[in-house]
Length: 237
Ligand code: MLT
Image (tube, rainbow, N blue to C red; front, side, top):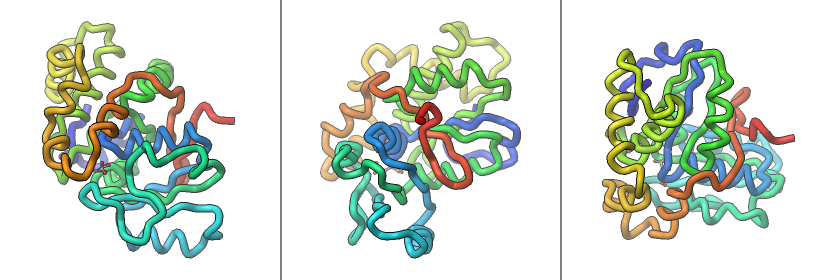
């Protein structure tokens, strides 16, 4: 178990990495794929986004993302999952650039497999994790290197379900903390997330509707998985 961004990239070698950015990059990617986006290309910065977009036909992609929660000027979409409707994203490739989420995906690069998790796709994620034979590393995106309650709470929910609510003693401290957090706040995830640093920090930028949306459990049976730089749905046709 690996929390926040304080890991060595080598730690994930040979593991299945689950990147968790509940608010909002994970939730946005899950929603985009659910609504028929062809794929999501996560990029670490605006430079990468424009390099990639230069090689694509502009009618086939959407340039998307935020800086500090705010839509980047000139981009087609920001990072509100509610904007990723079927009308907007179906059959499009999304080039996504976010403050923490897409950077965390980039840093998980040495993992055997990278999947994206959030509350929205918890069941789809667990179905997959229960079947994998590798160790699992949970990468909580956090905020600029700091821990974020919503990501740790979601990691705790994943650990709780994977262990049937009985945490073995020999797990890492991060897993114990996440598990304990879920035991304390798991009964009302939305209420806990609404008190998070993120919700307070971005209260004038990110709507309460966005936060409530991202706290819903099992809304979508979608599992974003990264292959050769593109994220698509593991369960998709
Ligand atoms: C991130 O990557 O830090 C988040 O997705 C920020 C946001 O919610 O816009």
